[in-house]
Length: 109
Image (tube, rainbow, N blue to C red; front, side, top):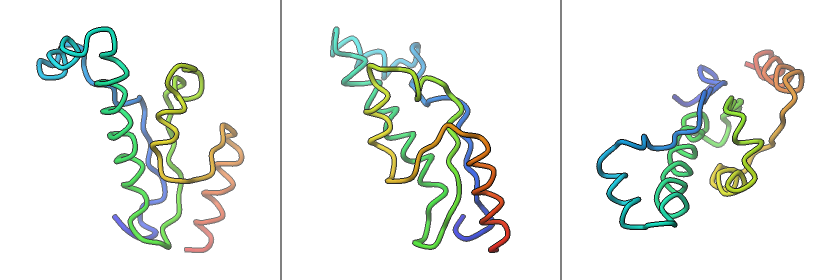
């Protein structure tokens, strides 16, 4: 939805595939020990980037992508893989900074 009608995309949890989903389970089994990094992580990175892409549809779109899953901030083994998959954007963990930004773009619209 381009334009000012969408300014916040909330992602409550990282979109990891379900462990019991048959196709992904078969791919993981085939990948063996590297199943997480070769199957689950790339799929999650793609879905996360697509979720963020819902916010930015035109060059003038502005807003916040709020990822509420703390693993994006704390999972040392894969967090940067996921962050690098996102479009270039400013990142913060500060709620007040996020709130002020949303208020500033609401005034402009």
